[in-house]
Image (cartoon, rainbow over all chains, first blue to last red; front, side, top):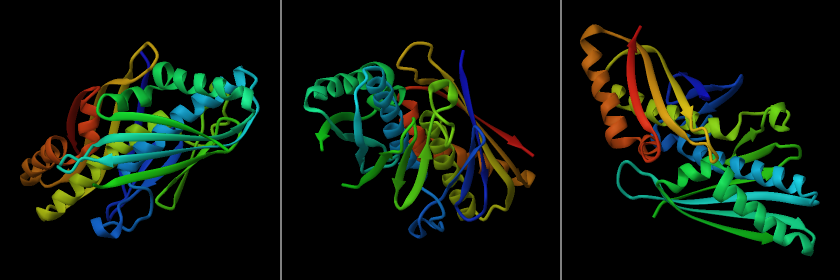
Length: 138
Length: 138
């Protein structure tokens, strides 16, 4: 069984520092919530996690397919529920990428493989949010 | 309706940089997965998000209750499923904290309020993982 562990220490105010495999990550809230905005807010990290997870899948799959690409970026837009606890209930991922016309079908295949088979973060999000994806060819 | 957006740009190799409300966060994979380990892995960010979310709740609630505390940290230990897509299916949160004997019941109350009412990340995790919490008084 594979396990992952992350330790997180309180730094005063509303700030915490997580140690993730030797990488330190500071989290905080904005002044509105009593923090000093010294790092990203914890909830939004979920969206970065989603973008990174599916992004790494896509790069890995396109590399295996020998597809040349550039200007790859991923936007994640999420709506929050109104009542506590506030969860992301609608999430849209927009993949932007530049590649040859004949490789567009491979990009579609890479996105499908990531969202339907490989990306664990996407699968976890699918448990609580309605998910949507689109590809924007540059 | 409140919405959150995160943009993430591919940096070559397996690395991505997310922009989260003006905070930049680099993500990468380890060499085993073709990366350069230049930042935390995306999936583990979910665990930091969980620790930060519930941690900020606890601090906020203890402050409102006028409870003095120190040495507050949060450990998150998660087991991954065996098959793709690999998701966190068992998650244990350990809160470590130093506070007066008579304030222990308030800490229990703070944890309960966070996990049952306020922490959206905990609620999202509850959709796909069996959750467990414990408090370790220092």
